[in-house]
Length: 164
Image 1 (cartoon, rainbow, N blue to C red):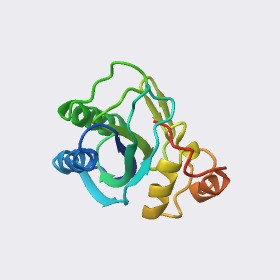
Image 2 (image 1 turned 120 degrees about the vertical axis):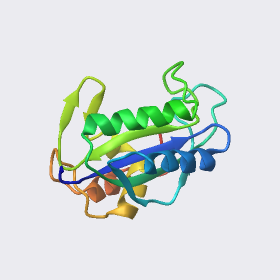
Image 3 (image 1 turned 90 degrees about the vertical axis):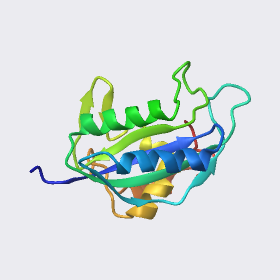
């Protein structure tokens, strides 16, 4: 049996019953064999940025997972949950019932078609860093070894850094 890896995912929703969508996504993930939801941050609401006019605010959270799945298999599970919850990919930054991103997978650095870990923009996003640091204030960027707390401290306006 493979040794479990710690992974972190971001969850977001800006359509309908946002908290319910995040809760349902976590429930689906708890049913995935080889994946265990260890901890979930509190939720943070952020304004939509670079989204179509009329887009509602996002509700965001981060979850810590323990998994024996590969990073690609975790991503596939996330995409399957998005599909179950009605995620439509009609246009970039379109409103969405659920948005699930693989942020970190152990200390691995992955750059493959459709899969970049660490998430390439996570160090710029309040709505990712703040919940991530709630779960683990010591987590580091595998690319640089820098604590994500330092990236958080550099955010010029933590509330306005929200973007989808």
